[in-house]
Every structure is written in C-alpha cells, then in structure tokens.
Image 1: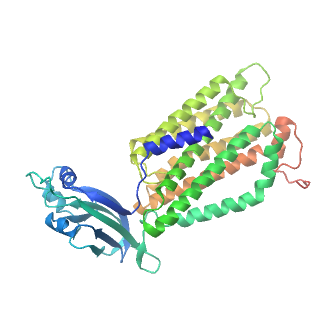
Image 2 (image 1 turned 120 degrees about the vertical axis):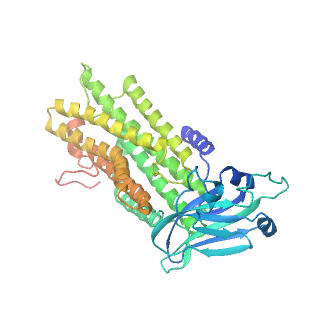
Image 3 (image 1 turned 90 degrees about the vertical axis):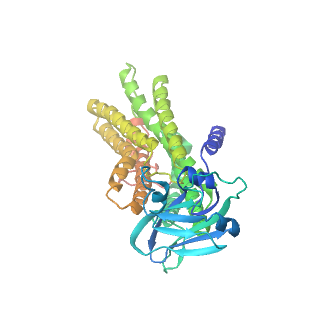
Length: 430
C-alpha cells in the first residue's frame, strides 16, 4: 500500500491536471506573437446549435488590444506563410468586446474538429510591446447540442456516450460481484497452488473497477460544468496503469517460470507460479519498460484518457512493446504446448494463450481498426473496445485457474465447491 501511495504522489507530480472544455486562462500578447497566435484548445462541434461562450473580465483592455478568438477547422497553416496569412485563414473570428458573448457555430452535417486560438493587435506587429499592457483574462465554454437540440452539452463529439458506458460498466461489475463474490472469497480463503495468481487477478480486477468508477465521477461532473474532477481523472489513469503493470508482471512471471522449471531436471510444476531470480528479473524488466512508456505517454497527452489516440512517440512505442510481449509469450507457450503430452494441460495452455493474446493485442488491433472510423468515433472505439476485451481476458483467466478439472490435474484437489467451474456434473452447496 505504501508503494502504491508513493507511486501515485510521484505520478501527480509528473502529470498535470488538465482542465475540461470550460477554460479559464490569461492570454498574453507576447505568447501570441511568439506562436503566431496563442493556442487554447480543440473541440469537436456537431449539429446546428453548437455554441461558444466567453466571459471577459476587463473589457477596456481587450478592446484596446483588439483581442479576438480565432477558430480554425484545421491546424494552423504552414510555417512558410506570414503571420497575417496564417491568422486570415480562420473560419470564424470572435472579437472580445463585451463582458459576455454567445457565438453560434455554423451548422455542419457531421462532427468537425475546431481549433481555438487567441490573437490581438500585437500578434503580427514587429514593434515592441508596451510592458504596461495588461493581460486578457477570459473564461471560454464550449457546447454541443443535447438530445433536445439545446446547446447545453459540454462533451465533445469524440467523448459523447462514454459517460453512459462507464455507468453500465459499473452496473455490470456490481451484478457480477453479487453473483461471484462469495465463491471467489472461499477459493481465496482456502489457499491452494493457484492462490497467488487468484490474488493478483482479483487485485487487477479491483483496480479496473476503481478506474471505471473514477472515470464515471469525473465525467459526471464534467457533464455539468465542462471541467470535471481532474483529480478523479488522474486517479482513474493511475489505477489503470497499475492494473496493466500488475497483469504484465503476472503473465510474464508465469510464462518465464514455466519455461525455466521445464529446463531444470527436478520435477516441474508447470501450471503453478514457479518463481526464480531469473524469471523475476525478466518480469521486472518488462514491467519497468512498460511503466516508463505509460508515464511518458501521460506527460505528452494531458487529456484524461486511459487509452490515448496514439499520435505521440511514446504511444507508438507502447503499442510496439505490447506486440513484442505478445510475440514473446506466444513463442514460450508454443514451445510448452508442443512439448506437452497431456491433452488436459495442452488445453489449459491454449486457453491461457487466448487470455494473454486478448490482453496484449486488443489495444494495438483496436488502434489499427479505428483508422477506418471517422475522427469523432476513434477514441470511443479504442476506449470501449480495450476495456471490454481486457475484462473478457480477466474472465477467461479466472475460469481457467478456478476450473475444478484443472485443479484435479494440477494439485489433486477434488472439491466440488470451487466457483465458476466448467464441469457439468452435480455440485454441492457452497
């Protein structure tokens, strides 16, 4: 527990708490000049009544500086263009000249990405900026039409529906817990050769549930104010990271342990967690590599997503690493299955391989598959698909290690009270 708390504190120090789509900020003339316009945010508007609202603190200063918001449907133009040519490419310009102003976005048949920037009279001037000039403080809110067509929805088109998905996922976890918590607790309480694996699986599942719950809390508040609870978003990402790392350590340790146990002359126990210094070192190395890339990914993208859009170097390296892990585990399991004479054990390893491949390859495959969808659907395809696939992977591994027939083969336990058994014979009461 102490290690987890220390890791989370370090994580918060490294990752900034990003705001949502209600942005309060101070816009500076020198920052706008340096970048040919100060970038604010991006938003996927859709429908006929999409809206942008600004609230201005100091109207005289904004008027004197000729401050304005520029909206582009594509990223800012080429560096070969002049400053004025870049700014003139904006599809919509909103002058900051009132305490509050509502601007309707032009109607569009499908969701479109809009980039919001700040500029003023000094942005393209070559003269010096008066140091006495005040900065412009603005609060900007971005809205999409809700189900009734009113501009009250803070969610960008790429985020729409995730709130409901997390609610349904929490409900599914609750129902599953009500059904299986007692038999699972009995299996954990009585111990046995699979006790360590079941503890790791249960911890990973609890962390996945915690990530889902924190994401739901963040999005529930986000739907009301457009800011959400950034701490909850960071907690959700942290829980997901720990779950990913824990599962990776378990899967790598099992496969390496089985391989090394078969290479020794002593009687092997290939289905148990047979640890050794070498297998532990290899698993820790794999965990360290993935953990470093996960933190790097969070640093490059401050938006709260457990599964990112993979436009950064860290994200692409993370996908490549997951594919490499899948190939390594696949080669290990292939060698074990090829050498195994027991049909029951071969069936065990085949099902274990399915769970491993589903856990590691679902994310890269979904990222590739999302390319055929439109921009506003890609994040939802990756997020929803990855969460569901990894949940199915955990269920496969649970059923595998809790199977009565496999317990009989591995440890000569013949209890008929084990939960989630795959056998069809009569069972006593728990």
